[in-house]
Image (cartoon, rainbow, N blue to C red):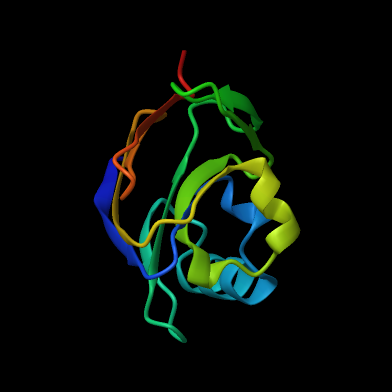
Length: 129
């Protein structure tokens, strides 16, 4: 499945496995119960902010970004989360954090992820190769 779209934030973004940073309410009740843990772009009903998430090609593991960043994955997904939605701050170390407000573009297709961040960085993560 292909997922793509723009996600706004007034604070910045986290890129990585969303299990490390989303609180239980948003992770299990909103993404899980409402959306069935599917790939896509989803809305938090409390803040009306969106987050994007998609499955990796091979599930859990550690994947490398084109900038040399490592992305450990324990829930089989990589996503883009506005910092306003982060509920577990100690999990930020497991992904990439960019504290620049603006709009980020997320695209995932076939285990390949592209994230264009508001600081001008174009992050690529290939979980397929």
